[in-house]
Length: 327
Image 1 (cartoon, rainbow, N blue to C red):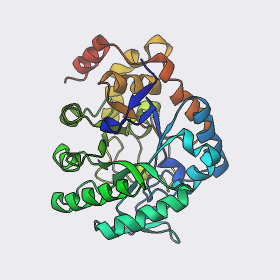
Image 2 (tube, rainbow, N blue to C red):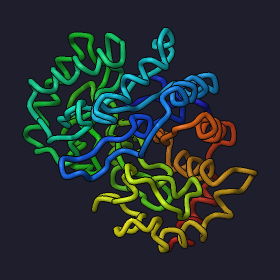
Image 3 (cartoon, helix red, strand yellow):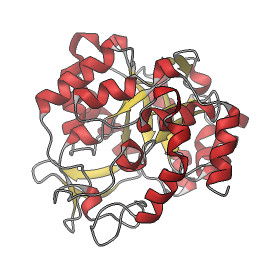
Image 4 (cartoon, one colour):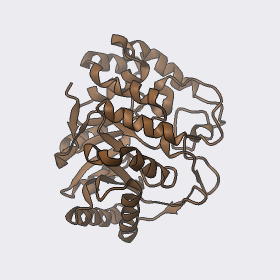
């Protein structure tokens, strides 16, 4: 496997593995108190982990302005420092938040807000441009999205953004953004347990990159099986859109664990860890996939980056996983 992939039609080269920066944003919540972060973080460890990932060849980092209500962008900017030009930075907009209380307060799908959000993200990241700017409202109205696509084209003309995309699991919505010449990607859920053939087909047809969020199924494909989750962790009170964890906060859904156990031997072949096998499955789904596993520690950064040298699973292994999972 080549260690780089191209972000769709943009021509921008990225490492085949990106790192998702949701977790390093720390605790934040919805207005009703629902946690939407991953609990407490050690900012110094986050900085060390980002820099370790860089040293191991990871050049693509994906964050959002709402992660930690700005904190993730600030920590990523701090970690990159003078190495900003060595990486491809992706962030997202669309959620409105109060950093004072670390609370998400709603969404704003106006082009005017997109510009204000971009200006604020550039400041927090310590940069003069974003390489991939993504709409973070997954169910935004398609007509309004067309206006936002045009706004992104204007950002490209001004040199503030190099390419853009939409974080949505709806391929028909993603296709609206794809009508713009500088649309390069769709970010969507994809992992061994949650395939997305329609979105992958769209990416292939329209020349988009498939940026894979939840590649490790919120930790289940990294080996999490149970145990108490801290109160500030989204998985302790999983919202309806987060599968794999019991609604009562008791931890992992036993049905998901059984499915992981069914394919564990294949994923851990060739001395891979479970997480490395899950990433190898994603690379085997096609040449456009770029998984972005989350991380909070240097050890997690090292394990995830270690998947690159082991490469993708074989077509036969992918077919056997489909058989075992009844697909």
